[in-house]
Length: 418
Ligand code: NAD
Image (cartoon, rainbow, N blue to C red; front, side, top):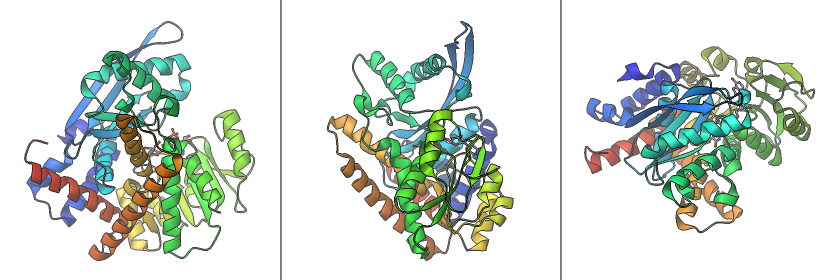
């Protein structure tokens, strides 16, 4: 089946899965059944462009498993998207949801496009038409989308609107990460970044880091900016940030208010004068207590892993560390890893809260959202650390094993169907 997914991120997700399956001593039958996605949908998405021409985009949705409940996962608008990347992200969503105890299987979607080059009306056309094409395959109890790279609350609102038109009434729980005014949850937009910061701080506590740790954040979008702000509020010094245009480093600390004002005005960090400009690769290997990659996959390569100067690596992004880099980090033994499927799970946990609130039409206070979120994160963090110690395996493998084990057991108990 792997001929369908020619993509290095998919290869990496499989390498991680195979390693976990070996630790868990899964039979070949179990491993094959748990590994491969349940359903792949690829659609063409015609959109009328601003100049009146029609452009046909390609979109994908991969629903990885339906064993524990409906599938759940983000939708990405990006020019790196293909079926393999989406399948890898869907697999990771399965282990993530199982790890933190959510009643979901994993899913992911993506449309091949370059959002900054699209006019607002083109973006709207793309979002609306993609959802229209997905109607036969999604539903509040079938598959629920959420924002990811290149998509946001507005995109979710357009998609909810299309689905609701089709149903004839408002269906808020068809997507999560939508604006609060149409049934979104308080706290959802900050939840991934705040969750990353919460777990990063727990890791810093574990290693006995001093007060006011120095933090570098790669990616200044939804996850990266919220993680940076949250770390700063907890007393951290943000010494480096980057986005797709490059990075900035200042060992004395960047002025995060100025940084935010710059991004609000220019939409990118390009031209920010508050620190030494450098490439993304250089920024990752600067001195810091915690490094938070919160952008793309496979940015921490073997070479970079050898040169990392952080004590905590808190993975806000999905799949930022290659399989080879993982081996180096494990061998070094001096970096406390908070693996992606644990570290960025705050987003899907609050999406779950949003889904519950939508189904019940009963809305929670923000304090209740974060109280429940932090309890789940703290418990999952402790489980991963404990399992890693008891099995003498890395935090990544511990998190993977806990997630994979749960899905495997559920499949065994239910039978062959799901
Ligand atoms: P976003 O589109 O809001 O922001 C992405 C940021 O990364 C932007 O600042 C962009 O300029 C930067 N970027 C892109 N490519 C880069 C590169 N090669 N090097 C450096 N910077 C780069 O996306 P987001 O929602 O913040 O998602 C970021 C990561 O977090 C992704 O891996 C996503 O899958 C993961 N994630 C997001 C959520 C969520 O709730 N949004 C939840 C879990 C995981």
